[in-house]
Amino acid sequence: MPELPEVETVVRGLRRLIIGATVKLATTDNPKSFPNAPADVADYLIGAQVASIERRAKVLMIHLDSGYTLLVHLKMTGQLVYIGNNQRFGAGHPNDSLIQALPDKSTRVTIEFSDGSKLFFNDQRKFGWMRLLPTVSIPEIDFMKKVGPEPLADDFTSDDFMSRFQRRRRSSIKAALLDQTVIAGVGNIYADEALWGAGIHPSRRVESLSAVDFENLYAELRAVLQTSIDNGGSSDRNYVDAEGKRGSYLKFARVFRREGQACTRCGAIIEKSRVAGRGTHTCPHCQPSDIIE
Image (cartoon, rainbow, N blue to C red; front, side):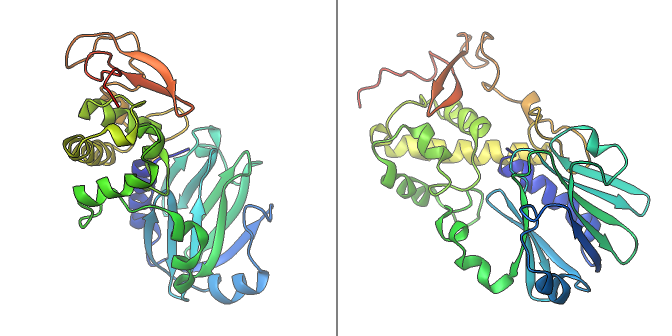
């Protein structure tokens, strides 16, 4: 599943392509992928112009001038592919649908714009979706009410960061980082990278961390997320960026998928284990696990 930097990369790519475009037609082959009432589609999507595009956690929001918004979640195998105006841009699960003729057997939704360009939502496993909702109602849907704050928000301070974890004091710090109700959009790659940067073992309980630990983790998490955005996201095998290219963050990764290699900070050998049910990469020297809790 794409993480925060990957989805942010998609948003920035689509802003260059479809802001101002007018929707002419919307078709689907799967109601689960496009669970919208035909009357709402006719009244609030067809003929509407794309006003802006945002991201909240891992969800894209395509705002329309009709007062409605298309919420898009790619889930595990979703793609968005834009074709038109002598351009082709793809984002999502990197199978051949990114480069071959569309629609194909994985195409679930096709949005056609008045200039003839099209946005295809492809999804092999049919877990992703595009939902049309009144823009004013979005803050009230369950997901938006439960999801934690954006870690890169200008007004999100280190004190705010530390306070968010108090609800998970008995959990491992990695489990808490992955909890979307604590912090939005953080996944496995960036949790490992931030914890390595802060010198914190992922299995440590939240309650064992000091205020200095949280300050360091806050700074590291924001740094690795911003670095990844600047480099087009990760190059994990299930993700490519908004121009159909693999992102480059993993070229800069310091611990993730480097098991058996020397730590760039101390030279110890990076280890892989399981913490919070996920493959986890740590340096046994830089991230000691024997701290008294």
